[in-house]
Image 1 (cartoon, protein in one colour):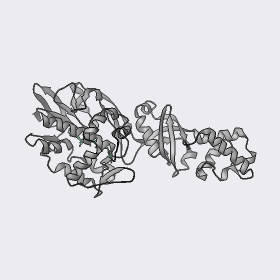
Image 2: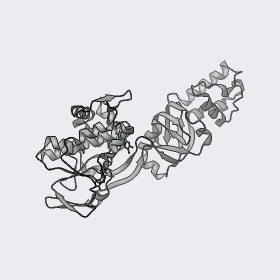
Image 3: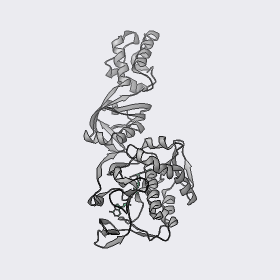
Image 4: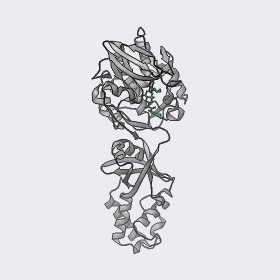
Amino acid sequence: MFAAAVLAEEAPELSVLVLEKASKTLAKVRVSGGGRCNLTHACSDIREFVKNYPRGGRELIGPFNRFGPAETVEWFESHGVPLVTLDDGCLFPRSDTSEDVINALCKNTAQIRTNAEVSKVWPFDGGFNVKLAGGEQLSCKKLLVATGGGAFVEGLGHTIEPCVPSLFTFNTSDKELTALSGIVVENAQVSAGKLKADGALLITHTGVSGPAALRLSSFGARTLAETNYHFEMKINWLPSVSEEEIFQTLEKQRIDSPKKQVGTWSPVGLSSRHWKLLVERAGIDEKCEWGGCSSKALRHLAAQVSGFTLPIIGKNKHREEFVTCGGIRLKEVDFKTMESRLIPGLYFAGEVLDIDALTGGFNLQAAWTTGYLAAQSLASE
Ligand SMILES: Cc1cc2nc3c(=O)[nH]c(=O)nc-3n(C[C@H](O)[C@H](O)[C@H](O)COP(=O)(O)OP(=O)(O)OC[C@H]3O[C@@H](n4cnc5c(N)ncnc54)[C@H](O)[C@@H]3O)c2cc1C
């Protein structure tokens, strides 16, 4: 839809038809960001920006330099959608509704056919035949596929990287941890084997969530799918401090407050309920006095702070934004034009490509950028 809106302005002489299988276009944009549409993210450095894309970041550097977040802001603001940047860098329409984004995209777009599901596409000399689910057949000179998923493109010879979920939260069988539901650790680190992710971590009634968990789910989407979401997660509740430094802090506590009970207060700034669990896991009675703890016990306690083991037994959907990792293999697409390297005249944009990102407006930004480049390329021809 974005590509069609750009084409309507940049090449009004072209005949453009949008085929949409649903009864309305832009359904995902409508519900995005909880109905408010987090349409991009503030950015001062494209190389930093692409770090939010576990898949597609490298390929998107060039495209973002041509049409990135700044150009997206300019486009929407000049099309009647003033934007606001929140403290976390997320950009939303000032009106707080995705309807304004939808209106801007639909305003000039020439022809849209809804309830028109494409079931098959095949090239002929000079263009493409497009078959609709009802049996009707159309033809066109150039074809842009922006279907989110890529079912019918496989028949054209393109490789589809397997689709697996990304951006999810984790379930655990550790009931003592989930009993702490509601606790947030502002800067934790979660890991699964070599994969590591930092950020705030929220303990939920089923497991762990929050930015650190979502980041791990996104960067580890393929690896974690192979484990069927059953693996041992390690949590470092205090990654800014080494395990040895934590041990030294505990030793100091033993010297300074020998008569105080270990379970009553955390000398490393964790909440008291959380601390009690770590003390128990280290094999120390919470009523034990600091002076009565051996160095070995304190080492065990430091290890619980730096390397808590959490058995993961599944995943949950993240409530606000979920995307799928997988899609058209990126090597098969020219990222200067978004044209297929296998079939001239065939273009791709958006989530149909093997591109996905973290939450925060990055997924829509990839869709705007690739749609814009495809439109530019079509217009220039
Ligand atoms: C609940 C939710 C909230 C989200 N919130 C955000 C957010 O705030 N910020 C952000 O950056 N990202 C968000 N995302 C992700 C973002 O919405 C997607 O990355 C983006 O919509 C992808 O755009 P797209 O045009 O490639 O695909 P889509 O938006 O999926 O559009 C593809 C269109 O093609 C149509 N179609 C599919 N197959 C056919 C066919 N065979 N024939 C004809 N038409 C077809 C579909 O009906 C659909 O309308 C969210 C996603 C979800 C699910």
